[in-house]
Image (cartoon, rainbow, N blue to C red):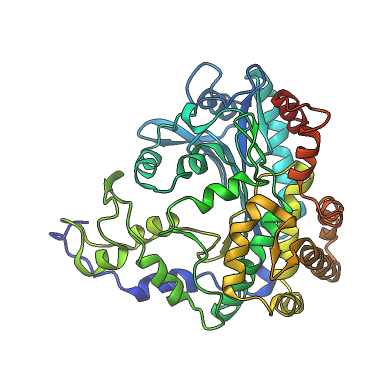
Length: 441
């Protein structure tokens, strides 16, 4: 919409209504998930490209034909598939992401994922592709992983700053969970608690110590890549204060630079010349700010926990099938129980925002061996699991079973990365083929 056309000016109240529209009754709370995996060639052990006879694009074509999914395209290029409310999309380096419609229970999500995996497996076999449940590309690096032909990703790759932004975009895979709230006060409480929990949960699920065929010295190189990507839009949003609000979250988003806007299906690059607040006040060239501009801009804002008309928790390495649901179970057990949230508040009350910020920087290297105020966080992680498990048992949905695989590791003070490193420096003799075979089980 250009300035030559008449339309009411976008106001902050319009934006705040987007967040308020997410309010739900407790009985309507659901859980959603996004689940990224790395496409690896069974022949070369390297990342599978978008192009080529056995590339990811042709895999999507074959799957769409077999299972009657519709194409998602960008400038006539296939960048994903959709069927009703579920999607299979590609991240910048051809990582395959399942985005599942929110469901009442983790069992319902698992049922959907299991079906999709069963449907994909024969086609993946035909293409000699394995989707690795791992946080970073084990052999190929961003220098030899091409961007998929999506205009948005090309613009982002040119704009995002930080020495590991290319790693983040092209090499990494993670798990994200989404959770509901009943009103603004509930949303802010959950948002603050989720931010405090993320360094601990990131450590518990650390699963990316080997990258480019070598040991990196970090247990989650994926988390390290986010530490070194565009601090204008990454990290913690807010200071975890009780007086935080939708408006304060929006203010943070408004002050971040705009990468691009869309008009009539075409991206118009802004390249950080103005932030969104300035766009609302003055426009950009012939264009005034619209609500869809904010939705796009907010989607290009990448905090550890993102507020929308639900709460999205983002920073966890992709892990094996028996463990992916443990991420969701931890947060469901805590965020969907007032008593569990109170217990977490009590557990973490002595730590400041600075403590959590420092922990976020220490977790990539040390995972559960990292310390907060001199306390080894593996001890706190165990307490977090106890609280989540007790809450899930009280819910009487049997979802506490999903915690079993992570309990086994966390109670021993180790993450998936520790198991990999033990084998890497032992039985595998630093052979990346053996790592990929282990991750392909």
